[in-house]
Each structure stands twice: as structure tokens, then as C-alpha cells.
Length: 122
Image 1 (spheres, helix red, strand yellow):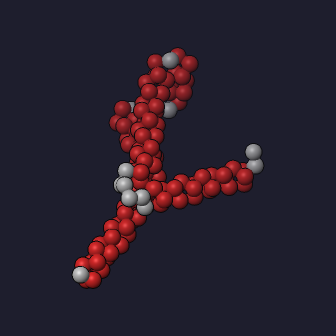
Image 2: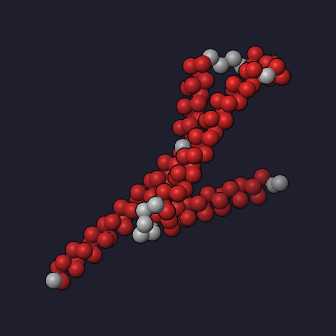
Image 3: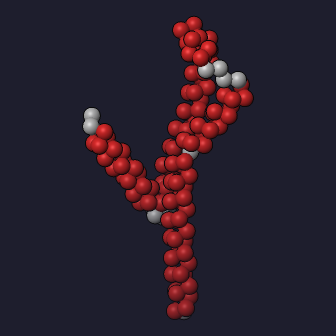
């Protein structure tokens, strides 16, 4: 696959996810706007759990002994690596939550202005 073509697909996917998040965040019910951030959070948790399972499996399997002998991770370093990966994989979660709160805040402000204008008419 052509790298430019792959980049275009990636850019289209990210753009689509952002527009979907904006659309879901503007709904009357607050829960649809939290679906994509929840999925992103679950993916990051699964990645960290998968990493920890891989590290324990790789350390007990003989075929991976040479890999682990080349790169020795003490338990503290492995924990720091898991925290780093968790934070890295939650960047999309933070962006999606930022979009959610920005859309909800704008929606709440317009709703309050409508209430105030209705009260002014009375």
C-alpha cells in the first residue's frame, strides 16, 4: 500500500471521528457524546493489560529469553513504561473529552440564553 494513500485513510478516519464526536456531543442526551471517549479509554486499558500479559508470558517462554536478555526491564521500569503507554494512548481520550465539554458548554450557554429571553418576554 502506498504510504500517501495510508496517510489519507488515517486522516479521513481521524476527521470522521472528530465530526462524529461533535455530532454526538450536540445531542440532547449527554450519554451519546461519552461513547467515543469510553471506547478510547477501554482501548488504552486493553493495551496496557496486553503489554503486562506479554511481558509475563515473554519472561516465562524460552523462545523470548534472548529478547528479554537483550532488554532487561526491572519492575519499576516496566511500571513506568506501562504508565507512559497508558498516558500516550489516552491522548485521543482527552481530545474527545475536550470536544465533548466544549460542545456541551456551548449548548448549555445557548439554552440559558433562551431561558433568559423567554423570561424577558414574560
